[in-house]
Length: 405
Image 1: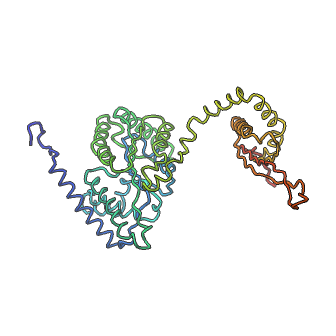
Image 2: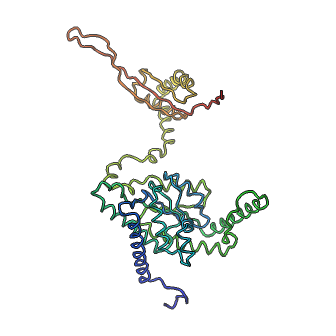
Image 3: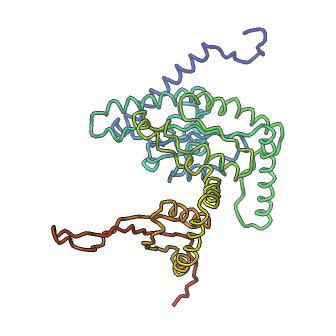
């Protein structure tokens, strides 16, 4: 023990770290062999995507987990480690006087992940929380890669694509955490009093940490020293999402959406990404779209004043009457051979004006051949070529209240 170390504490050294890695290897190998014995190796098929979720006390994991699930298109309910430790298997361990340690947590989790309901993806709330669990997570991913290699030449290869790992951390500072824990405690107490007075409703769990500043701060400290450090240590290996959860629910959800925007460069194989990288992301296409639209309309006014006026009159006199007649359906299809649209700029002006007024516009231009005369020498038919434009105008339909017969 060095002279700065407090009595009764364990100094964290390289030897300690090596011991934890060895413990993780022993734990994981035993759990993995148990999985093979029970399910057989060819049936070890894990979710396509696993979101490892951690959050500070009061950060709103319960509030924001449904939004994360929706954002990623996941249909299954989350796996909450604290709930998993209350299942019959964990209760047997506790009833027998044992402790639910890292081995038991990893066992329960990996067995649960094999449930087919999580095939497309799942959120895991509360793992990893210790350094041993972190090492087990690394071993889990590495073993999935080896499993893929083992079955690569067989027809089952598509069933063994390693899960995509996302590490998500909802973060707030200590002051905000304590405030929210106290606020939650007040709301729970108020709710429980109403239930007790009325006899209607269900009592909510009252956490001692929600009523004691010392306990609330201690709970935050445990979070920083366990979950926070565990997830942070993995950020260089897997997709890492640090989300500021200190704002309003709407602001937090906006932060979540931003974090989970499409990440081709990270999720696709380099050979695939290299082939499609020049196609812009949708988020890039819409960036500054409104400002660019205004700039184009100003240019039409300045550089194409006469044509701009012609298109405006055409929309007012010919398009709007047709659009109004389709107000119930929200879709008007207009066919026109007007020569003014032979000029591409006229079509651009038409599209931009309608978009500015809130319509969605799609135009399909085709060349129509109209027989005009026959060449008396060759007997060939000479045709007049006309450009025909099919213009689809979509908008929010009128909501008509229908009676019930």
